[in-house]
Image 1 (tube, one colour):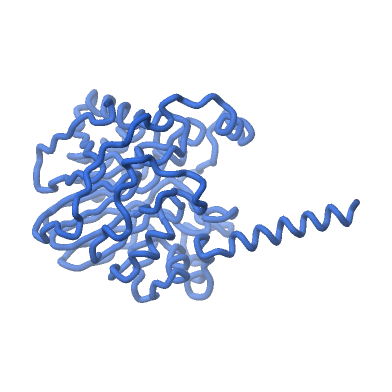
Image 2 (cartoon, helix red, strand yellow):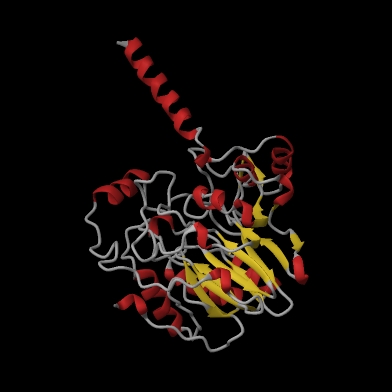
Length: 365
């Protein structure tokens, strides 16, 4: 009997290493990259740390309860949309270079062109927000953009290494169209395994300022989240960014629970012309690592943003709320606070030079 148990355990361990050895799972840092991580003041006890104590689950919740609710609790009838998500297939390759635009590609993926420079942020353009093709399938209509739609890029920007932000099929497919990659400390190990050259990577930690082309500057700023593509968590850093151009300031929020870092960023780098903030795939059980709608509104106030574009919704069902609840709640709460919240369709261009952009309440249909 004991030999049978040992054999089963060995087979399970072997199967784990076979599965996680696939390219999609990336690579662990070693050599000089690991040395840099060990020297970071944000790296302690063999993992990166948030600025504030950040438990995985909020008080009153346990992992068994969360797992039970996720798999067995009756689902919201609108967990997934009943009809196709409305969207516009803008031709990104033919946007004139003198236009300053933002184009949401669904979930947390978006394209920015400003001051003659192109940026692609967290592109997930395969049909799944996971390492496996049978899990986290994209909603129909939200999946209209493919890797082949992406133009030549000055900068690919990654906020952290979760599958719904760092998509192996997409990043691999666009490799030859990317000049430079901006990403947090440790994440470069994944991209090097996928064929990117070390000299392409601008891999830094919070507080680092980097001067880019055309007098544009990007600053690595804190977020309150976690990372990991395997069982082990927080072996790479997660980040938000401040993007300063000669004509405007943008805050790229990344995945983050609410904390004091939003106020700090607003006071040090604001006000912002635009803040792109994650709003969706939340649950009160994990409020410390994913912002609730009321937190999104407060974060927008804290960073002092003139225009707010909520993302991280409308493509995958990664939480138990209705698919359209994030936009419904954040627009209502924002209106109560007199915030200018922009809600373009997936693929609908936002003119970054206009101060009066208006968009339909498209998720109510």
